Amino acid sequence: MENEFIFILGQARELAAYELKQILKNRLDFGSFIVEKNRATIKSKAKAAEIAGLINILGGTIKIGRLVGEGEWLDAIHSDIKARPTRDVGISDYSDNSQKLNDIWSLKNDLREEGIKIRLVIPRGGQTLNEAEIRSNKLIDNGREYLVAGGKVYETLAVQKVGEFVERDYGKPRNNAFSGMLPPKLARMMVNITTSAAQYQKSNIKNQKYRRSGQLEIRSIRSISPSLTVIDPFCGSGNILLEAMDLGYSVVGSDISRKAVEWSSENLAWFSNQISDLRSQNEKTDQLDSGLTDWSVATADATKNNFFFGQQKTENRLRVVVTEPYLGQPKKSKVSRKQAEKELDELAQLYLSFLINLKRLTTDYRLPITVICLVFPAYETYEGGLVGLYSQIVDKIADLGYTRLAGPFTYGRGYQVVKREVLLLTVKG
Ligand SMILES: C[S@@+](CC[C@H](N)C(=O)[O-])C[C@H]1O[C@@H](n2cnc3c(N)ncnc32)[C@H](O)[C@@H]1O
Image (cartoon, rainbow, N blue to C red):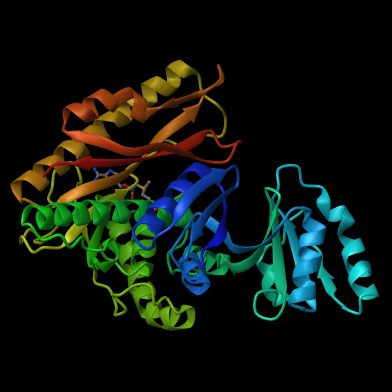
């Protein structure tokens, strides 16, 4: 039976929606992907458990729910509780003009008159329950959380495990190596969009081969093995590599700084020791590759050297690059447009030299690196508006043979002067 499912998107909705679509595309059949503000909905025949399991993969989705009723939200929840009684009930309002929770007490009274007792769990702040409130009240296992959005009511199937991101971010041995580190959720979204694009490209090539050879069988994209290596040639303390490792990929990191290499090695060693435990706890059965993943880190200048280290054997393994080169000096206050352009001009050299080197490496070693995810800096100016490095060098990047697959997706809170622009590029090796 077909169900409607909702995905509540976190910060950076555009990127979160793109990530979701790519992950879904590679995994299941679904229809009518609709994105509206803070949420996306799909219709699918997939099992609820399968959809709920996506929470272990996605970086940008904070809750996943299944449609249980439409129309007036209080009536819809009322009839659902009548049909499937439960004691502990929470309601989160994700609709566009949230102020509905004021009426919530009438629900409890009306149900009591019908002999059904419920305990309402009220959000401590705002109109939505957070992960801690949902978990401490056991709303998913023993009770129910309803999500109200777009004139419909959904039941929560899964909530993002924020604690795990925090653990990777602050629990690792070297946690404050560099200021302005890439947030783990962003790192995860970047890894997901890049690996999905690479797997998708490969499946298309395969399908074309099948078609050409007269075999009509169209191989399912899902049958593609996740055997894939994520490379970060500006790895810093290793945030991108940690997320990639958690998703079951092998990782290769490098950095020009010896200290960064030491620290990311410590972090990766720590995490690979933890990962098998984490996996069994989280039932990350989605990843076919359930064993420990390989990792290696070395010192290298990404603009000059081969950062694939002897991996140039043409084994048929997909490799992708996911990286954040350098955003420039941290900034507390806005800069002038002129200043922004001057600073970005200096950074342009690093980005372009890196892209030239990457292109050279993929050609020389015939490495099938076809998809690259890069973070470019963009600065808020006091004249108003962002000035970004990507738009300054977009033509040069195209001249080098790179094509834009998606982006730029802007990431950063309103008050932050230095924003990130995430770009997904492809190059012919
Ligand atoms: C923004 S940090 C990366 C942060 C990383 N994504 C993280 O979250 O931990 C940039 C890193 O690039 C490194 N770097 C700068 N120039 C480089 C070059 N030419 N080749 C390799 N690494 C370089 C710096 O040492 C620094 O560790």
